[in-house]
Length: 377
Image: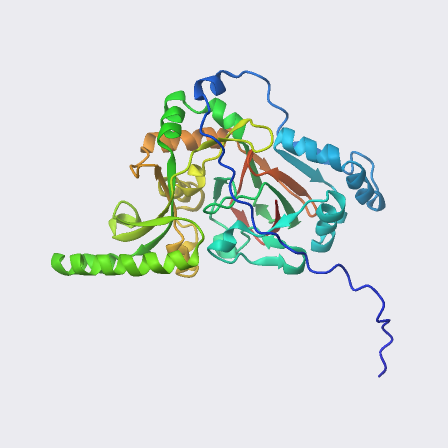
């Protein structure tokens, strides 16, 4: 049969080119915590919502609206920290979602920051759209509040889109980093800012060594540590240090991989405003265990997934490696959840996020959920 397809007909846009994810802009450590907490200036509405339905836009008018209001939308994103685009038909598909940020907002996409350590699943690789924790096996796992940052890489912006909402739960969460600075206890905030913090980014179960004689443990530990350090050094593009630890994993011995210390508060790269930039809520093992009891009866579904989930367990410490007290961790969790906004998204709804000003997370859910994200320079 002879093809009737015209070879000159367009076949859609070419695959999106993703720039390397930018390095984190830590800036100078010169923030006066007392002065920040004294600031009583009213913060902008958070998040700001824009509804195509409220604006009376037809499907055919949506893209033109975004193009004509690009400057205003991006200015509001920087001012408010998050902008929710609701009731748009354009963004109900990966191709339309790409059209919105590529041709409407003229944003420059970048690689997933997770790429330096693992590969996140894609919803549409050619459109630069990554999956946003939709696995049914992790439906009871509450994704704690965090800025998207891996090692030394941090995208400046993100666009999260809902292609299908879960039947129950699965809300997308956003948190105002400026409000966090105002509400945290002064003594805790000053302490963690002065000491810095560091993340444990992975841990390798080594409980089998605990049954060995002490002399054999002393022989094996340096060898295992050297081999692991070498393997990790070839895998990631940031500094890590491996530490033997028994305070997590129910007292079993683990070799924990920790990243370099970094400040929990920094200045926004464009506005110079101090912002909370600490992933304590998401990375703390203690808070993760507490959430598991609250949301899933102690079972977050990790045991139903591959063994890599047991390796990819995180924790957080002060910069000198000492533990953050349970009292302080609970305080962070309390202030976080007091300020977190639960956004129920419908198909096509998009949340634009300033990744330095705003943390994000995800509620537990039932059913099938399909949310996705594209990162930007």
